[in-house]
Image (tube, rainbow, N blue to C red; front, side):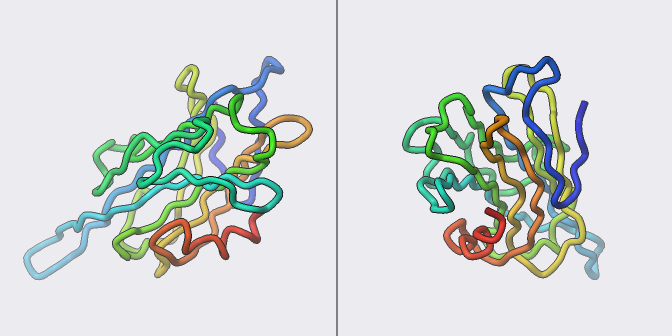
Length: 192
């Protein structure tokens, strides 16, 4: 059963049977909003990019994004860059797979971000979401829908955090501005 998350909501990533998830996929989907013009409505391609920044004790130690598709230790993998969005017809346009069992013990948080590499704002995007899927069986666990559009070019979407009871996910949903994950680091730090 999917949990439709709200900003700030946290869910445990333990399974109902008491076990824990071993691999999850953070999927990102979006579509360009139609723009009305003199000759009807048209859409412009939007290039959003999903990134995962790995933190150890509030310090970034690795990143996975369209120019670095696999973390140095191999535990986090980006499935590839999508330059237009909307091709999934409601499915994922970009995905990042995290093998939780292989994430190094010093990594305690993974922050997922989305940014407009080409600089378009979220006012030009519709139906944008991120979702967490159990990679072992394809079951959607949680979904966070971006709402409100806005004049910003990025969003700090969610985090997966290691704690004493295992991994949990928190929907963050903080708007930011930046074309790449590097631009977003100052906006990420308060979410740690």
